[in-house]
Image (cartoon, rainbow, N blue to C red; front, top):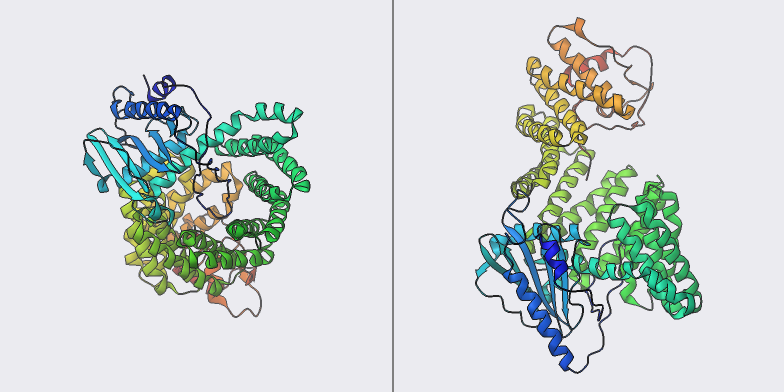
Length: 618
């Protein structure tokens, strides 16, 4: 019998009391906190409730992996159950997550069972985080409840029971060794609470038809139903309930201004949904309206400042998606300013500040202002480094920011400065990938971008080892997932280029031929790859000339020539893709297409510097 079926036998869903779940603040994402009930006197009913809670809790400490039909896997080699005990607001709370996907939420006093697979992905994320920090946990034989103020995790493994804990004060300040595990368990709780609303939409609709007092409950349930569909990857089905929620909140807020905050949050959910559906123009209007509402409310309620900052950040992203980068700058800068102020007094906002800085960096890059992108990129790295020092689970974010910093140095033609952050990113990604294979893609990207920097510094021999490793990783990833073929082709193309720079054309030929073959296949499925194929063909022809086999050269489209009088030929060579610098796929603005014969300078450059490609910022 699977753990999911055992959960189903434990009891029925009892909706009794909700309690405060401290909000996990994300840029551009705000959810309603659950409201704690007023304190009340303990009763015999509460005593019976706690006895039921204790019995249910003991059940999960007694259940064996074999009873749950769970066995070690490549994804979860050690952990099969994680139990979070969290005494809060006078209640005992337990969140259970199992490796095969089921989860439960137990509260005393409150609901006894919220079980099944309604939070399958969230439950698996808990197991993943537990695997990451298992080495920090202590093996134990008993499992007492924690004292107030402590959040304790019991990790059940195939070799015994382990425990690890942090104070809630540290966790609420974005600190502690269990922070990422705590966040993952919170998402399981949120999913279960939202499922209460989702399942009660028909009930609230029926009650609201005869009693307007239930309109607010119906709107909340509809909004959560939309969020549930989005989590299931069904955004088109999320649209109708989200639109209805906005309509109800708009009507209610017209006569009850206290609901304006709920309207703003529903509007931002609608904007995010339109964005996910690839409709940035439709995402813009509800997001602007949400920002307008929050601007009026935030001065009277400072707690809404973080919502305003998140909504402004979203607004900047949506303007950027529409190619209106100049209009995106103002809300993005304001988002950074608000989060900077919040983070100065509350370290919990440091992560949000880093995210908003990253958005600003991307925007400056899109505006062609790389020198202005550098300071916020450096600041983001500094914040990520400090956060990772307190919580190693955040090392992935640090690696990503370092990777991006290296890209921005490259855009400023500061290849020497790009090396240290790129090297550090490789080291971190290598460590992470050794424990979590999902980081292999990031490691491959960091490796071949490191190779590009070495090449730009005229050190092609040092570019070879990371590029060879990137090719090996990309080949394995592509074997399991053909969508990775394009990345494999890029790495192969660069490998051929480095061998060519080293005067080893016979070794440059096989990877370049393979890149061409892959791009031919991709072009047949998606013409957007034609430019990549053309560039690889030009590389191949350079190598054939180096080998003294010019008769084997293949026809390629005409290469761009310079505008008359354009003096920045070196820059033009690089962004055309006929030079050792990073590839720019869009027009660089320094040249125009020409059908005339390529001049001697370009011919010499093409023979000397085969095309190299650099993976863009993440």
